[in-house]
Structure formats: structure tokens, C-alpha cells
Image 1: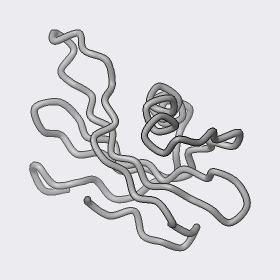
Image 2: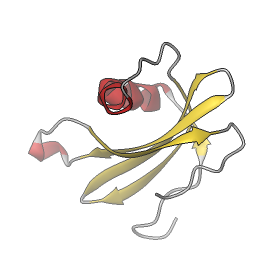
Image 3: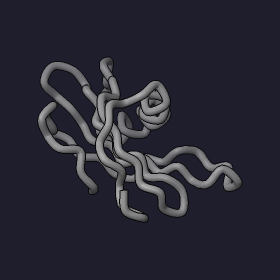
Image 4: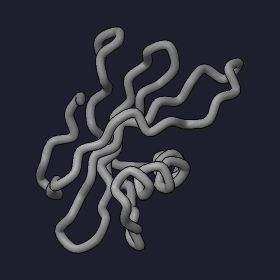
Length: 98
């Protein structure tokens, strides 16, 4: 991994699911819909002045959504923030930087 670049994609872990779960409500408010299925399946990270988490989330059926979640440095004691997201994704879509 190059300095500042995103890590290679890897399967989501329990920690990844926790990150996704913490921003689920933010996404539901932005999209004005509920997600009964919200399963993190793949992730990448990027170290910046904190960490960007790129997460592919299965939201039911053949639908996926890509999230970019910012986690500030621990001493800042700030909540996770949904920085950006992409809708209309499929299982096969690459989880890239956005």
C-alpha cells in the first residue's frame, strides 16, 4: 500500500460491520429510506488525518451501496461521519476511491 493511498480490498470484518452500523442512520436520513438488510461485505481503508473506511454494503436483493466513512484521530473524540456514498451498486462493482 502506498502512503496515503487506499489499502487493497478485503472481506469485511466484525469491526467493519460496527463502522457501517454507526453511520447507518445517517445514510437512512440522507436517502429517506430504511435498510432492513445492512451487511458489510468488503472494505478498504485509507490513512489520512484519521481514517477513511470504504465499505461495500449489501442492502437486500441484488442491491449494494458503497460508503466512505471518516474516523477522526482518537484524541479528537469525534463520532464517525458518513462522508460520501454511492448507490445503485452491484456485488461485482469494484470498491474504489470516491
